[in-house]
Length: 221
Image 1 (cartoon, rainbow, N blue to C red):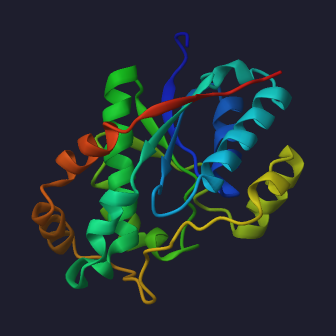
Image 2 (cartoon, rainbow, N blue to C red):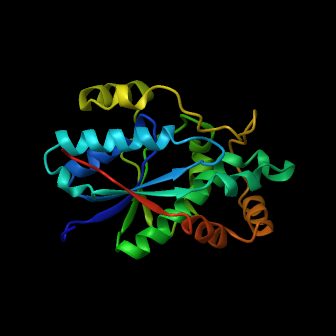
């Protein structure tokens, strides 16, 4: 990585995050890709799709050498299971995103990044309501880049098709195996903090997950 601005990109196996990565590469950013795997609750399907999408971007986008050649994979399944108890379960998806941002913040500290990149767009799922996005952002020590924030789903799908990542990102993936049927749309910050405090605190939870960190090479050939 050179002197260009650097962000930690939270890359799922879904449609949105590869589009966000492509947009920031074209805007001149270096990308440190990170995948939060819900193993052992789920398998590696989402991770495999994240790798395939990133490999495709590296092969097809100009200046794609800005994407670091390794995907950092952090296991979060056991930690997320802590938020399935009655008091915390309605906030499960917000806790999940807060955990991801805390993990990304620690990695950003390590690599010297100045921002965290996500594929979030307003209102698509419960954790992306205006109220919940604020609660998620509070867990980050870095500014969050959301280049897809104002797009609707069809616009993102159209961009993914142009990039060639849409077909890669579709298919089987169990990303919300532990989520509630009726998630909260406006989470209470005090309740979130209390739930996390009961599990040792968000910072401790993130560092525990980071003990599982492994790297998976991305191959442009």
